[in-house]
Amino acid sequence: MENIGNPSEKIINAAASLFEIGKEDHVAIECGARQISYGELRQAVAQGAGAWKALGLIADDRVIVFAPDSIEWVAAYLSVIWAGGVAIGVNPRLSMADLASILTGSQVRFIWTTDEFAAQLLALTETMPDPPRIVAEGGNCTDWHIARSAAEPIQPMPRESGDMALWIGTSGTTGTPKGVIHTQGVTESCAVFAREILGATASDRLYATSKLFFAYALANSLFAGLRLGATVILDQEWPTAERVVEMVARHRPTIMFCVPTLYYKMIQAGVATQLAGSGIRHFVSAGESLPAKVFESWQSAAGVAPISGYGTSESLCLMLYADNSAGSLRPTPLTQVRFDDLPEDVPQRIWFRHPSIARGYWQRPKENAECFRDAWFSPGDMFIRHRDRLEFTGRNDDMLKIAGQWVSTQWVEQALKSSCGEAIQDVAAVAVRNDDGLSEIAVFLVAAPQQRESDLRLSLAKGIALLPGHKRPRWTHWVDALPLTATGKLQRSRLGEIHKMVASRTASSAPQESGVRTA
Image 1 (cartoon, rainbow, N blue to C red):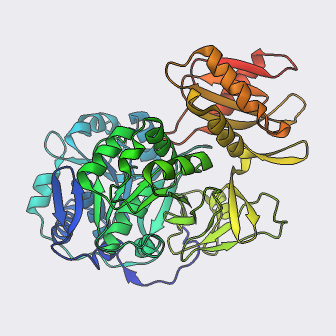
Image 2: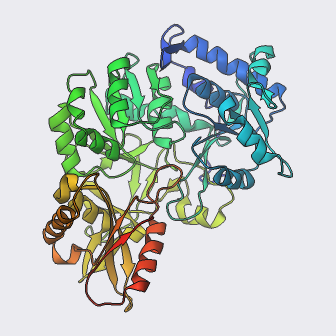
Image 3: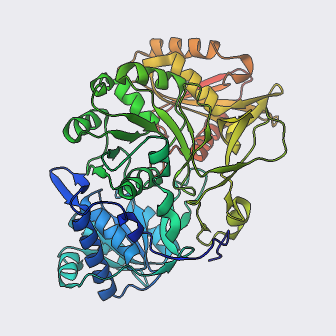
């Protein structure tokens, strides 16, 4: 793999760098009723690394960690890197078919898992020509408990800063998922945003509602928390509005990382007010744009204004942040931003430089050439410049010109969410083309439970009427659910396919409304 950006080389180990600050007896991770101190976690990682070496792991061997979040998850993941391997966290809700494509493309040597998934993984891999070794406890798998107990702790494997440490899988919203390669120096800068913007210290307790296979939670909660010597709170269960409130009451975090959809659900469920006075100093939002209405509603309910961040799997850390309802973004500490020579009011891709930027994609030379240049990275997202601030407008294919004016499908989504209120549960807008090749907007809506059809139509009609003419959707499709990727991101390419299917059955010049039963 080409070493894109040619970083200055030094001897380092990404896992070991996480233990430079934490005090031996301070709680590093809390999960359910269990805790582990920094001294105990470091010992578990060093001993786990010894087990990996005994099992035959060599430098750059890929190891998938396929399990719910837990203390064991963290120890197994970090021990892979400590031993010189490459850790890959994968969504345990992923189907076996989707996992098979990952295994084929990434040449995985081992899969670490729990008894819950061992049988499925064995069945999946038994017919592969060079199957990865399944490591779990007991059964027909390599017994991790026995291997680790018999192993001697080892020193962290010395690596160069440009060597692989971990991969992050992109969500595949616009195509086949890609393996994003992060190098050994990636963990060193993960705490900078928390320390300099959030004022985080070793006394803080960090809680991310997203799971550790997401870059957002991995970098900004786990890695940042460990680099600070703070306490990181994990939850094995999948997050719901009620579960988040329960976690906050039980574990008393001081900083929470969440996504806009879940903030909105907590507002809708009427539980956001229960977090007022909970001791949380900062609510951070990322993963998608934070609508102004959600910002304002959350501030009113919880008593603390959320901070909205922008980051990608390729950047791992947050590159931009906003602390106002307008969502105007500015660079996070250590982030450099470069623009093309275009007028300020024209949407454009921008380039980022930061110590946590990835080396590139695994075996994707075309995408590497397009997105990575001389240690700079350019995502497929578009921004409009407003003096020293940036406005996020969505991906390149989310931007379109109607009647000579720029429109972002994200703007349409946020406007309809705001105007339709509780009548709709979810909405997504996509750019489509009519038979004449002109750009139009199609929206897909999921009705909130127990809403009358007449109320839904009236609410939508009022919401559309409030939009300027060039932002009004020409097509509206009611669906049971929006199509999501395995990591929970909206699959916009699938929406385009559904629209084409519906549009081909409807030949009319009038704006259309449809009911699509599956998405």
